[in-house]
Amino acid sequence: MSNKIKKLLNSLENWKENVKFKAFDATGDDELSQIVAMQRNKDIDGLLSVWKKKLEQDYFELPHPDFPSKVTRAVYNSQHGMANFVFMIDNENKLPWIFGQCEGFIDYIITHKHHFKASLSNDGPITAQIKNLFKLQQNNLQFRDKRFGFLLEQTRPYHFFYDHLKYFYFFKSISTNAASKPLQEKKSFFKTNKKNSSTEDFTFLFPSVLGNNMLNQRGNSQVKELNEKMEEIVYKDAIQDLPSQRKENTLRVWYGITGQKRSWLQQIEAIDNIVSYLLPHFPSIQIYIDGMTAPDSETISNYEDEGIFYQITELLDGKCEVHSCIGQDYRYKVKICSTIDFFIANAGTGCLTPLRFCKKPGVLHSNKRLFTFPDNYSNLIKKFKPEFQLDVPDASMPHRADFASYHIPWQHIFNLTAEVLNQTKGTDIKPIEVPAVEDVAKAYAAQEQAKKKKLMTFTAIESRIKSTDKSPDILREVALSFEHSGDIATALKIMKKALELRPNGPFIKKKIIEYYNSIEHSSYKKTIE
Image 1 (spheres, rainbow, N blue to C red):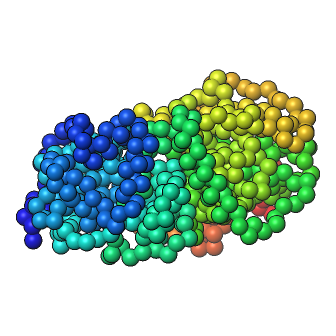
Image 2 (cartoon, one colour):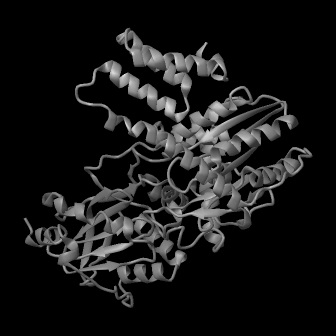
Image 3 (cartoon, rainbow, N blue to C red):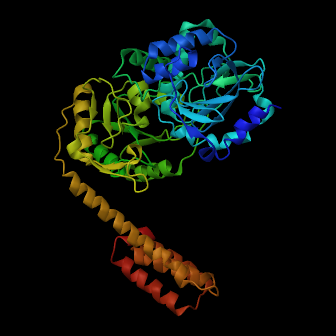
């Protein structure tokens, strides 16, 4: 067993205390120095040339960061979250090192003495996972003849499609060898229909080159071509055997929601009001609610998104059909979205399916700092106006653009929707007055405060119930909490249950009479009947 390998792994257990950060000298003429220099200069052509050469080789080899004359080979990889770590070693097992990938070809370099930031990409997803590496099995890290393949299992859809998959498709187009490379894609967001390879026989690398955040489609025509080619392949692959689902004269709307961070705080009331204003112009409307997306061929659950979906379905009950795409995979979503008329979605990854894959007309909303897919779009893509938008930074992450939620009056989004439909459907939908966003924010704050007051009536139950209390006592306190929250109908139902358990309870009987009298003079009467 090599002491050098053990020394490198031991340095990673408390790595922030054991190593020094150092600026990587990319002025050398060795291949690793050239890769780092190309990344810093955003030289996508140079990086693709390096990959073209690597694709023709069975083994992935690079010079050592500290000893450029020494050739090292990739013998193992380990993925943690968004980061893929590739272990390199020379044929004498004396010069181990590791490089980390996330967005770029080589984002981070690790030796037992130094750590180097190798690209312009955010290294946070990589450095957050280094602590896991000291547990690697040392016998897996020794030099041997181990061929390399590609890892298509990124945990974030944006980085999967725009940092990895687009380059993988490009590699296949320029090299027959690339098409025959083994793949690991069991948890892929979009499988390439190739049989998965055993992780025991190969070292897997992300097919990454230069992160889309570093060079996007609006800033570089070559990146734009790569992105759009990938999007075209995904779209055509996904819509194979598309069943006919369309009803004539029905307006089909794709509506993206967000139950977690960076959400449009008016998203629930918005779709209810937008549908109400659109109904006079269309015989029927179908709404497809989009949220979190599963890996290919899987479905997932998401409590927050599904909670918003159920609130929307209650509001739209009797007005239109509502369908959920939440937790489905991209193949399913692209199939459905290919048949819709227009979309309303956030300008983050939430608009990926309607905007980029399906190229549908629609409306984008977001906080002021987040726009994931900058490009030159047609006038059928409408984006919110900043004067109608107010950011609400996340309390725990106030500086993170991808965490900030926001207020936008639904009337503004409706007016943008009307513009799109007037252009695409020949309708004559008139714009409506838009209130000041500050007033919308105040109304939202008042609603939230009212909700908190109602919840406080329930949190008080704990202080009122004693360890000696019986079931009727507990039910009585729950009923009183519903009463204090304003829900007399539910309070009555629960208090009646308490009476069944304590038929002679004078206080319970008294409250039931009060509730009946209250209901007799209110809209609750129908509910209880």
